[in-house]
Image (tube, rainbow, N blue to C red; front, side, top):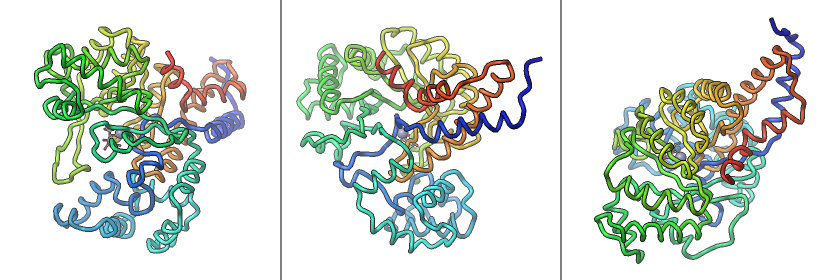
Length: 418
Ligand code: FIX
Ligand code: ZN
């Protein structure tokens, strides 16, 4: 019947795990943050925290302001309205709202005063470079992977000009238009001097390949990534799949870069909400099973948006060692679902996955996203160690440290190296 452990032993294990998880620096493998050289693209501060698109979706349910009138407000006005509606008129219990409170509290601000003016004054006195360091230290994040799109007109010139890289940041190459909107992407590639045609012929494929080789080298991309709609199908005869198989996967394979797929997003379900208007849908993961089986020489990363797909995704990762699953993405990044997913992944995959990424868009969000996730990861891991203790296996402190470091970036780095 196993060896039931005492409450004291359970508490000791939990405390050891919590300490290890709190002390281990994180490699945050998917964010929308930028290194300081990108200037205005690097978002930080209270107004940015308040106008985060998660919060916009929530405020427009609480306020009767029309969508266009909301968008006509200035950023400080939008932030002020969000503060009033979501923090003052109601308690900020949603995950996104609670995140702002955790963040301010950990930065040493007195949230109990509910004084937006004082919070703004504190942020106004911060300098961006020092603030980035302070936030990363507070969140205990040592490396950040950005989302870098060659198709972004503001970002691209910064790479073209060149700058001294900040070693704490690494690049991730985002190629959605290439696979999802070839007519638009082909115009851009032509303008940049690649001899591509609207019609995806052999010459076009080799020019896309040349473009990817150039761009990945320029930004030193850790991996390439795409988000995909629920109806993505493979095999299929369309421009996207032709480019994927003809150019993207060969580029990834030959340059040793994983390809990250993020299935399940339905863009602009409510276009009036702008960036807050994306929705989600359940996927047929059979398409991904086919892709993984057809390309064993490629390494894939995956995070899936629908809660309903999570169990299937774990089974897929058991079947294909060229797949590493990561993070609780977007609508799954709420405590109840993170806990369920992390438990399920650990039970099916052991420690061979990366439980979380932050998806932070505002630097300060690193603090709450990691605080909240660390608490859950600790709880789940401690439970597993307690179960093991009841089965007669005691983990040692160095083993705990090793396991935690794998979960917070180590397993990902190993997978990327191949
Ligand atoms: O596609 C993505 O990488 C998504 O994470 C974003 O587009 C989304 O807007 C987001 O911020 C989710 O957390
Ligand atoms: Zn993202």
